[in-house]
Amino acid sequence: MACKRTTPHIATAVRAGNLQTYTFASPKSGRKALTPSMTTRIYTSAYKDQPALTIESSKVIAQFLPQIGAKLCSLIFKPLALELLMQRPGPTYRMAPYDGDYVEQGECSGLDDMFPSIDRCYYECYPWQGTLIPDHGEVWSIPWTAAAQDQQIHLVTHGVRFPYRLEKWVSFANASMLHMAYRLTNLSPYPFDFIWAAHPMFVLEEGATLSLPGGIEKVVTVFSASNRLGRYGDEHAWPIATLADGSQRDLRQIAPKRTRDAEKYYIKGKLPAGWCELIYPQSKLTLRLEFPVAQVPYLGILPNEGGWQDLYNIFLEPATGPLDRLDVARLHGQHSTVEGGGSYEWYLAIVLSASH
Image (cartoon, rainbow, N blue to C red):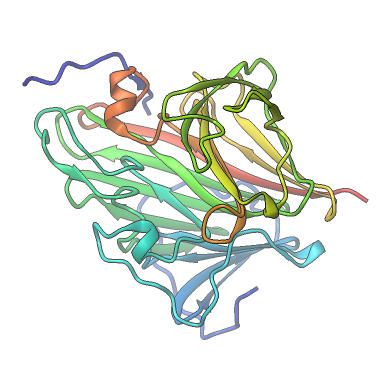
């Protein structure tokens, strides 16, 4: 059956040891460092049994795994000596094969890039119709190349089943803001539909609260371990949701780990503005994500309150399309498309601030 294209969103365009250093090749193209006068250290390091690349400011240490999806594996806020990304125990990194299961075979930690879908599904449109998109996308499990220049890291990978190039420039906009600029280039003459989503597993502490832009009215359930938020596609009011048992819950308040529940939902429709915040009351820390709402208009939220793998964490997932599946996003005309030979650019910034 022919693929009928709906109207998409289209845009043009530590833990780190001082190991031996090496000379990086200059990237052929890239972004200028946002703060060239600020001191930034970039050096090779190790994460478990894997080679890593670390970028460090006076306040933040960020460690990446170029050979494993360019994963942000560790994010430390130095003023509080606080690791903000979920870490798995053990000295050996769990290496998943291409097209492997993200949860069952992968490390499932840190921050990965999900592209061109989150859930496994089949691509629907010519000339790649019927091509299976791997679980959590292609790019989290494959090698990226890395280069460093002008106080930034340039990371690049290419599609396996689809003809694209995905690039990421990592730098500090200021000492407390890690900035990741992305460029997707379509290497074919045909339009390419996709979803990109950040997939950070941020640690939680009791009493943590969510803050979102004003004007949001509803959320849409993707899954609910206890069914308190119903089934896939069910809608609830934001921020006060009526649960399956008739009780009400303020979704801004993260419940304690002893709740033993987990759920995921998306803000219904496009966000009014490109940011979200997580406030840690005990640490007196605010973690803020910023992204361009014109290019990244959707947000998925997954509070894991001890209901999955005995972990206490939250996924805050800015995305170019909702509901985890490219085919479902296309059905609702909420996917993104990069035209043949074209490019699509966006960024993700992580801003950390402590109050006294």
